[in-house]
Length: 193
Image 1 (tube, rainbow, N blue to C red):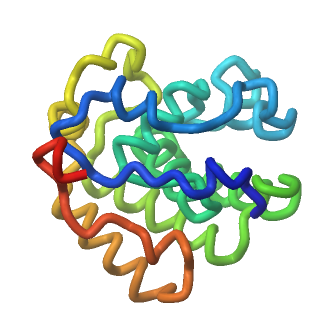
Image 2 (cartoon, rainbow, N blue to C red):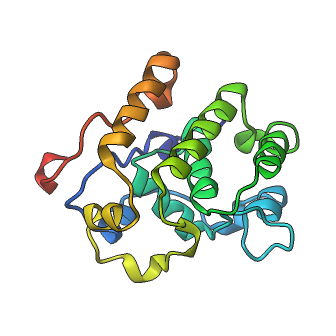
C-alpha cells in the first residue's frame, strides 16, 4: 500500500483526554474526491450496494482516531473490520465478499494483502464479541467536543481489550510497520503526548 508520506506517518495513539476535534485537526489527509469509485461503491452509505457499516469519510476518519490507528494498510483493514463488525448487520457471506473485493478488485493503496485480510477478520470478531455500538450510525459531527475517553466508553470500546488485541497483532506480525507502532497504553493527560 502506498500512502502519501504525511498521512502514512500519522498515528493518533490512544489519548483519552483529547477531544475528537483536536485529534481530527492533527490528521493530515485528502478530501473525499480522491476516494476511487470502487471504494465508494462498497463503503459509501449513499451507494445502492454499500456493505454493512458503510460510513462517510469524516466518520471513517473519526473511527481511526477512536481506535488509535494510523492509515497504513493494516490500519485501514482494522478500522473497516471494526466498523463493519460493529454494524450488527454483517453476514459471513458479506465479510467474505468484501475481503475478496478488497484483495482482487481494489487497486493501489486500497488493495488488501493476505495480512490485511487477517487483520480485518480479527477486527470484525473483536467488534462483534465486544458488542461495540454501531459506529456507522453515530452522528460524528455532533461528537467533536467530547473527549476520546468519553466517546470510547459510550461506544463500548474497551481499551484494555483493544490493547491486548494490538499486542497479539504485534506478536503475529512483528515486522509490520503498522503493528510496530500500535499503542501500548492509554494517555490520560494531554501533556503525555
